[in-house]
Image (tube, rainbow, N blue to C red; front, top):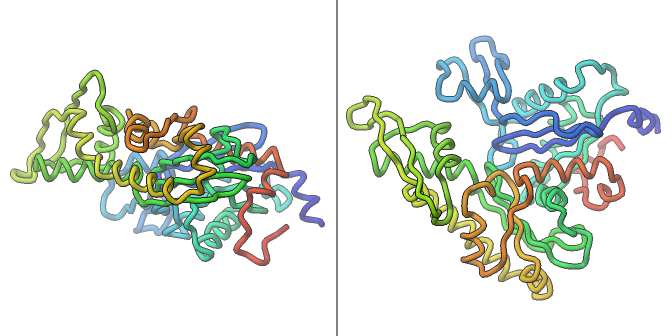
Length: 350
């Protein structure tokens, strides 16, 4: 009872905890933080050196005694301690002026569909250890659907494809629940690695992660585009060991990432094949909605629509769909109660 009283004086925050980026939103204030999920650790001093964008600037440039850690892999916490410190950094960045237990914020945070009870508890423990007073877990696809303004409460089918940084989730939603779903460890970071492998295999050129991501954003596409594009690709020649530059086309980048895109399309088809026919009829009428940062890839909607023979649209500002959905739940406690995933901790503070 006392904790409930204290919670009334604490602002609530929403956290979109992603493999590539962490986005934090504060009740009544909106999005406050959008930073990469990267932590720089000084091994000599055994302490955190930088978090987020400051750490990202060090990727590929740091000396050996500095470790660049990505504490989340495929949407799952792979390093509990580093994740906790990263979350504490973000929460402290918002609540520096507030001290004391009474001001510990309530947190609504996303989790993947294929999470285990152990992994679920790790998320809760990390958020609580980072300074939260209460934790609500919500499936990421549900939050994305809310952010895309899909009618998740209706007795009709909505299909959303959330293309994240470390994972792609495909879900059919009806009556505030996930009816059918598929999860793949193929997403934006996979596309980057595909481009790195393509440059190595076809040009004997070694390029870095950041440059591969830049190529994907600048000229990457999943469907043939009207105006061909080119870009200089720079890296280290694997034969001579010297720096080299060459020109790569949008067609070659598309060729590099197509196997991964095709794997997503095949998983989508399989999801439709195993979905109840009544819901499939709704999906064919309403179409498929794409969310997540990967939805920004040129032509991804056209490629999926052509392969699945279903209309496809991209949600408004797809990269922030999840955090917008989580933020909506901060304002609607009744809906949060309906979509919240049961806690893995029996002793969670209520």
